[in-house]
Amino acid sequence: MLNGYRKGTPSNEPRETYKPSGNSLPASTDWRSKNAVTPIKNQGQCGSCWAFSTVSTQIQSRGDRYFFFLKCFPTQQDFKQCKLLSDFAQQTGSLEGQWALKKGKLISLSEQQLVDCSGNYGNDGCEGGLMDQAFQYIKANGGLDTESSYPYTGEDDSCAFNKKNVAATVTGYVDIPTGNEAALQDASANIGPISVAIDASNWSFQLYAEGVYNEPDCSSSSLDHGVLVVGYGSDSGSDYWLVKNSWGTDWGINGYIKMSRNKNNQCGIATQASYPLV
Image 1: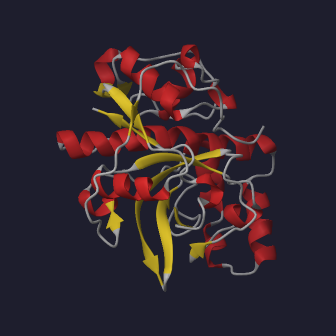
Image 2: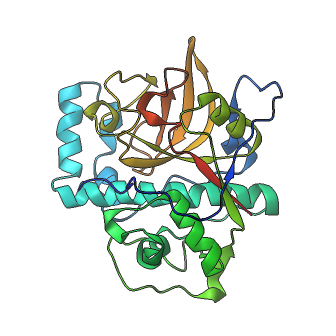
Image 3: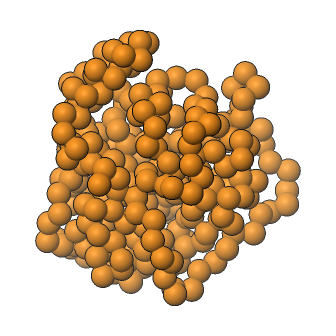
């Protein structure tokens, strides 16, 4: 199993559904400019491999990029650990954003705590988990530790949560209406960074380097990867979502990707989107 995001059965936990504001929206939004997005994660197997091959972003040949990708991820486990970091980073990323916007302090939160400690809420460590279940765990647990106090290792371990290191808490979470890109745009404009799940199984995604990503073969229902929508815009007439990944800054556009927007929920970007309440 390469993926970390694991689609599952929703829990019976009470939840809110996002209600669009109905207001006119800006043509573009980028929460990085409002200090609501932490730096691209670059840790564990993922960090060491992409740091090894910084030249990969400058190589335009698909064959050469494929070669460097395999050099970075020689085994399934290496790729799985890299994807796992992103899947849990998008869960912490939306909380980091909400905490910064509501509390005025941007701080990196622990993905490893979610890997090690949220099993009782339906997540399965290195085999993946669900963003809503992660929010449920954080709420019940009383918060999430800092990244610095509980760093990412890419492996299952015993829970080492320390309440003295809690940096952010959750009171609930809100789901975006499934498949509704207009609602996702409204939330992205008015709320902040949004946790989403996508189909990242195509090589075109894994080898992405520039431009607006358009993959007609993407599935809108078979989701295997968690990322963070941090804004949206248009590029030469093509609408896009600005998406934060966690495969290091040498992947994509300094760690980000522009994913097609308003193309029938391409890659399922609006299928399972949510954000925490703080």
